[in-house]
Image (cartoon, rainbow, N blue to C red; front, side, top):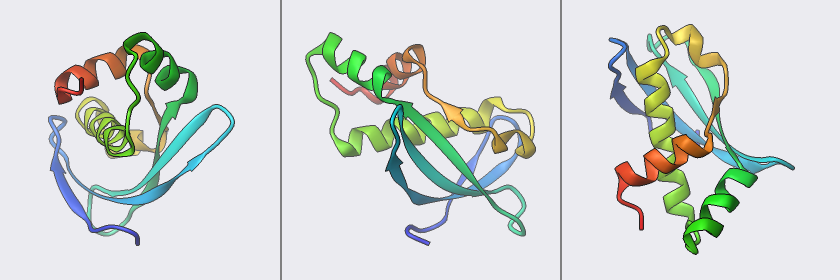
Length: 113
């Protein structure tokens, strides 16, 4: 494990535990991986994908370069949104894909800029 386990009480009614495992850069995305559990007995890897074209387009439009800690905050917020919106832990097996509209909303929520 790279990080420490943290807890998030989702609007879906589940309490998730998650631990950041790291990131990797692919041809189209930066993939952030979290280990996630909803029952403290089993866990699985959940990928949060930040497409390069989404981040680069946002940065170009705002003339603002996102720093690493800002990207992590965006990804973590997207993970929390998935915890809140997906009805059951089994639905967390699908990757979380950050779209441009998601990025705009998350950046506003976080007060980046």
